[in-house]
Image 1 (tube, rainbow over the protein chains, first blue to last red):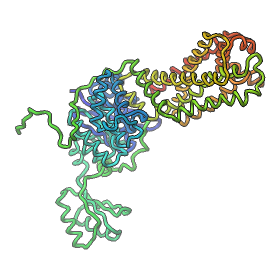
Image 2 (tube, each protein chain N blue to C red):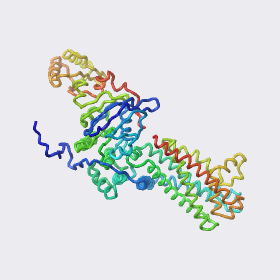
Image 3 (cartoon, each protein chain N blue to C red):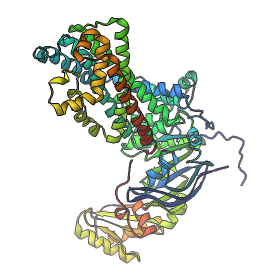
Image 4 (tube, rainbow over the protein chains, first blue to last red):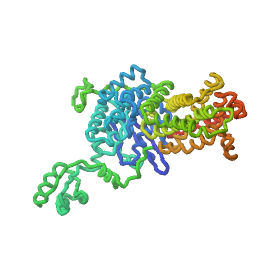
Length: 322
Length: 288
């Protein structure tokens, strides 16, 4: 079985920006893989290189055993790509869009019609099939776009920030669809800025920044490396925030992270749920009222902080979409 | 741990009822050159036909322009001698209509490049050449429509050919050829411009090129330095070729030349434009 991706010292430069900086990565196939990183990390450049849309300046990249530079046509035969912007013709109907892509994959008229009908059903657009995509909502356009990437039954599905800009309902729908595809055995490579998205969808996560791989592994492995769950609390006023910070630091060795603007503070909770009751008791004894208190997973920012010592904010200029 | 693995068709608990497909290992052959060209062209033509504002902007503007020249300026232009002004101007008008609709090709390709659809097409197992040829086929088709429409309006306002049907047909065929040439030019320029807005700016190129030519007025009344430019630029050669083919003797008397004197330079210009812009387009798309 070939690896999903074997990248060796992959480099790509746009002007002065090194979008990919000698990136090396090996990912086994047969799973959903998330490329996680902040804006400008090189996610889009990486996925566009996998999709044969960009030629790397240096290094090599094999996708399911095929070299993207010398066997680009072979790679295109088994991939389906859904990019950041919905890549559809809005002046055509949903059916026309899917049928065009099916024909371009090389399907005959009958086969193209059959797969168009099937995919319309899969993405839930059968009722809207004969309306121009111009009349679709943002979520429907994304579903049509996903459909177009599926109409050739790809072995490898490439999704570049699939849920960016979607409302929560559409996002969950899309998550379900992606998960089901993964279960059905399609290899999926997706990029995301959201840790929870990577966590929900992927069996394997690759964290990249500045065009190189920072860490990779299963979500569980990465979280262990990145630190534990966090207790976060939110107070009504600044005075009680200060008191709460005192209570937290007494209970816990570490200095809590404080955000005065939103009156929140958070602290790592290695014991997870065990620490929470004692925090609540201590706050109650000190008679501090809190708006709410939660136990949550570390955010991407906190994972980054743990892995790199800096937050995503300080990382790199805006990502190239070109 | 003993797990029974006889039923590999496990459905995930989150699966919606419209169950997805089994993963068939895909090895998509990809569409042939002709089918890919057709599909890409069909998309562009559909987009145009379904965008009334594009049709109105392109076609009606041209027709309006023609009426203004025929009826507003036409009476005051008195240097067309043996040829009535309407017979003089319509061949020029039909030729230059190629540029005005060609501008649509420039903004069209710039839009394509910006939108995501182009990326999708390039990620499919089809050759880049078929994407370009699809675009060129579509733009040439739209251009032929605009040529026919402009000619029709011309006939309505009094234009007649005086050199027999075969020469008239040849004149129209040449217009189509020139149009095809300019489609390449505009696709190349549209790619260089990068954005639809920048491509719109090409009208600054189109206006001097069309007006400082023999398309609407005889060149002989222009100042000398301007005549040098006007006499050697492609639109003058093209307009005069079409004029001579359509009008025959009357045009020969006015221009003092036969068809060959303009036809060959017009073809040379056409070949030159194609030779520059075809490689440029292919190169620009390959590295985009």
